[in-house]
Image (cartoon, helix red, strand yellow):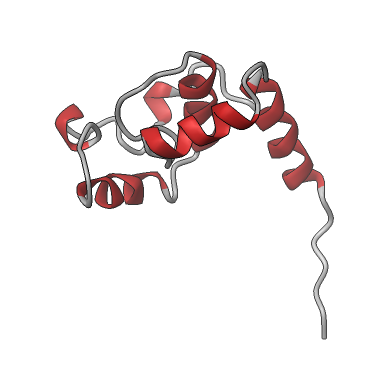
Length: 97
């Protein structure tokens, strides 16, 4: 399910903004906050659709987001990520024995 008002549910909501807008190796620490975030996909879509240039959003750095934007410059990232999220939750779980 897609969350419209995602910011209040973000794992980083209680963090200082300076911890998410860092450079170099510190970005890996910031990305760790996103690992279990329930609205990671919505956050990433926001950053991609609005071409936000700074900080870690949805577990991706500016460089990682720029690479996606170069590959699909006209994409509606919300649509792309929303579809992918729905498909991943609808897919049956297969257990091999």
